[in-house]
Structure formats: structure tokens, C-alpha cells
Length: 129
Image (cartoon, rainbow, N blue to C red; front, top):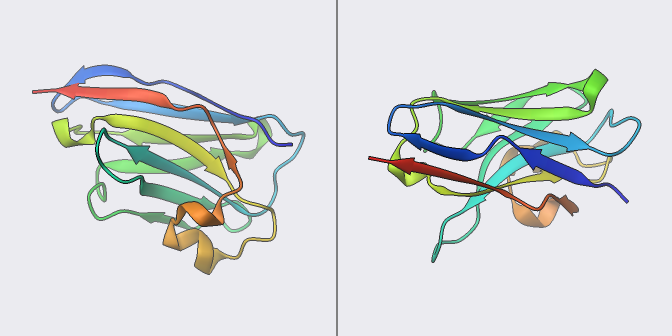
């Protein structure tokens, strides 16, 4: 069973930055996909960014392109989401997710919840104007 622990959320003003971290409790995670999702009250969950562990390919929602960067540190089994130029509409609970190791890049790039098998508990991000 994979456990994911997010950290790094908080409250910032418009234009600020935060870096979210997601630590996976497995000794090695060398394939598959990891992603960041967010859900604001009354809205559907949105796939924000994904990274293909095997090849390093990344994909982003249009709403965050150019502002958010997903990256991985294989030695630490950790995935990060660097969020710059934050806007009030970025306010949401952010979740880290991991797929089974066999997930292919095509599915990883779609950032669909149903492709991810393991989820963290979430970390709140609040951006004030």
C-alpha cells in the first residue's frame, strides 16, 4: 500500500509563491505517474499537473501553465509542485496522487482522477486578493 503525505500548503497573497511536497512511503517508485489535483468548494476535482516517473514528461492544466512546475526527486521519493504568481482562483485543497507503476504516459498526461490509485490527505492553499 502506497502512502502519500503532502506538505507545504498555506495562505499567501496574490502573486505569491508556495511549494507543495508529496512524499511517497515506498522504497522505490521508478515508473508510473504522479499528479497534483485540486478541489475548491462546490467545484469538481481538477487535475493540475502530472509527471511521468519513468521518462520525466510533464503535463499541465491550461489554468496553471507558465505558473506551476511539477518535478521529482527520485532519491527522496518526493514530487513537488512549485506554484508561482498565485491567484485567488488557485484557492483549493490540493491532493497528491500516484498511479500504479504500469500506467502509460498517454494516460498520465490526461490527468484524470480515475487513472490514479493512491491519494494523499490533501493540503490547503488559500490565496487572498
